[in-house]
Amino acid sequence: MDATLIVIDSDAELARARALVDRLWSSDNPADVAQLQAQARLIAAYEESKWPRRPPSTAELIRHLMDQHGLTRADMVPILGTPSRVSEVLRGKKELSMAMVQRLRARFRVPADLLIPPPKQARRAAKRAAA
Image 1 (tube, helix red, strand yellow):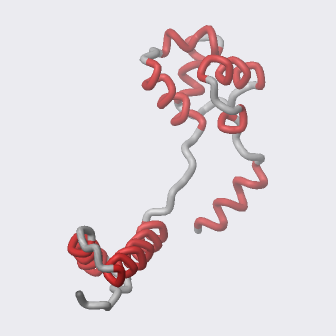
Image 2 (image 1 turned 180 degrees about the vertical axis):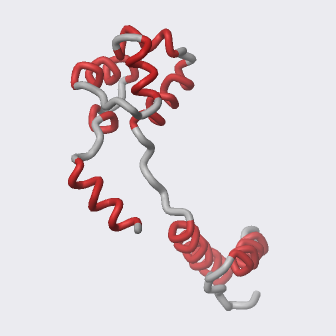
């Protein structure tokens, strides 16, 4: 097969690169496997630059955990306090207290550092880096 890699600078080139990976996928030829790995890395680099990953917000994480455990907002009242506090936390309007973090950590068995937002100084630096 052709040993040319596709450098990706547009969505059209991304489509071509994905088609190449599809063609190379079933090959046992070591040269094709090496080309497949290199092209996959180029695709991953392009996708990461175009659609960078961002960590979920605390509210998104809690909603995901609730969904995974089949819980409702009412089920969260003993953990977060009051119905209005549950609403504020799930809308991202209110940060978690350490007591809430401890109860969430115990209920869902997740590390506390997932529930504690980064310090404001680190958030500003992350925003500047993303811009």
